[in-house]
Image 1 (spheres, rainbow, N blue to C red):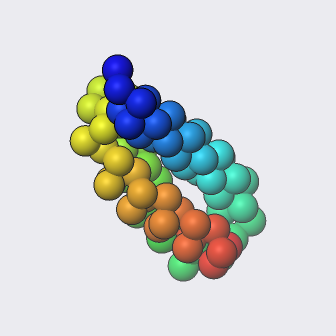
Image 2 (cartoon, helix red, strand yellow):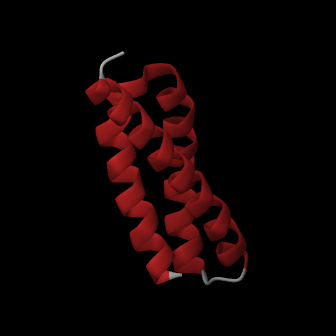
Length: 80
């Protein structure tokens, strides 16, 4: 594997770990949140779970989707 491919693989791994952490944090916060946040969470959670599953299978091709999901998760975490 080239250095660039290794770096991308490591970055994808870090992004996925961050996304999992954000997901877990939001689960706790959503439990205490209002209805609007719960609605937004219910829309986002399945996307995150699907992305985590597919990213494990697809590797590099998932990087853009992971970055988008990270951004959405961070925005929702701020709103919670």
